[in-house]
Length: 553
Image (cartoon, rainbow, N blue to C red; front, top):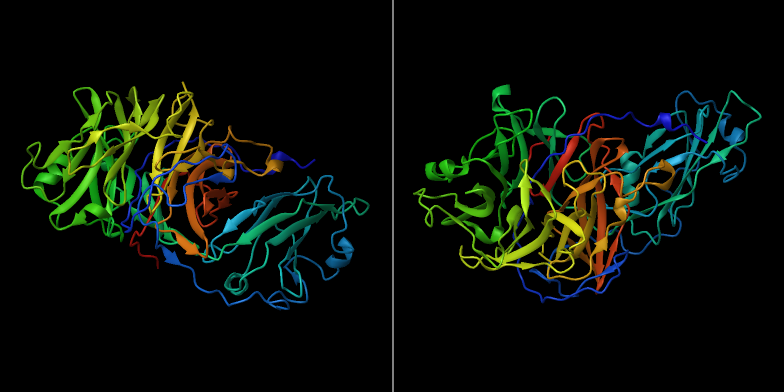
């Protein structure tokens, strides 16, 4: 058995908070219910529950028909420094070896779906104690040769040029990855072989940029564009006295980050709302009026959310949650307000039929609905208990009848952190058993349901690799956020979700990506992809995914 001590050490985890990222789409589609039993694949109404039922970005053709005799993979093995030329002979025939004490393959997780423009795949594994020489073998459909690498490292990343060549071709099936290992100090010991892992390259790109909150080295926002191999700092308090930045989202044009700011760097409570440029310069928007700044500075105020449906001169709205008279409410603020008077510069969205409190309101991209977590109690910023996902019409600032979302308002679960896909068709959220608090809870798991209601689909991405020895519930999967847009290819719509999980580094949150594909009425979800461009020694939380206009050197 391999030694689990080889995994990264446990460090303290501090859960953060952030708002849904939004952008505008057009078109309409009908409402409907799913009929899935909660597994993978699930079901969704073919038209969806929101907007932009047609449209979405189209995938590039990707080279026409799959090739049958490609030579992108070299004929000769790659022998890395520190490995002798005789290493291939030490392993014997391809595939030979014993699965006993075989390496635990952490990346790629078998069955994962990769955007074609994403980070090049990394192979990472945990070997048995004493094993110090490794063979990585990747087999791809249509490739004449296997890609074979001999190394003494437990992590290897496919060269960029090679990944670009493979990802540009339409593949008739997944790439298969296996790792074999040897203990060179024990010549008589048998070759050990991992379980095979499969990696499928989607005929679709992941669009937009991701900005996330890190609490390592002080509170800050960092970000990267799809495919970037490094991250950049987007926003940091100018001095320690300015405290904490946390909950954040993008304005629909991607120019600014809306976020919760606090003077207390330890807890981030109580917070106010601010908007600053996403290019690292920290400028406020010119349209933000003095009255609006006054309204946004009220405390405690959390979770800014915007909509492309209300993002033009004369109609720039921010939604927040604000504590008023002992009750958290959905509050709208006119960012161009000339008055701080209620009903003019701001207002409380009427939620008929709902006497509970509000957590994490989310504007639909079309701007016609608001989704939120309804709860009897909000504590410590966004922490809540016994929540359910509800929706209420926008109705020109007036609100209306509030109703629970079928499939996200089960009385046996605490459901929270709602997030809408770019076409308002799908709703992702986090849930755990009733009675559990949302903050730092290892019982958190992510589900997807049609935004108009239906049967929830549990994300396959909740589950870590089996050989890791950890399982979900138990590793905290939370804060799902959809990519800036989806991609339609033939009869399939490709969506992507980024989320936080503590599976990789004990109690340190890290970011993961997962694919969601809708075909007709069927939702199919995929295992997680680790984002290896993030600093794995930092605690990285609460991502937002939108068209942030960040600047990467």
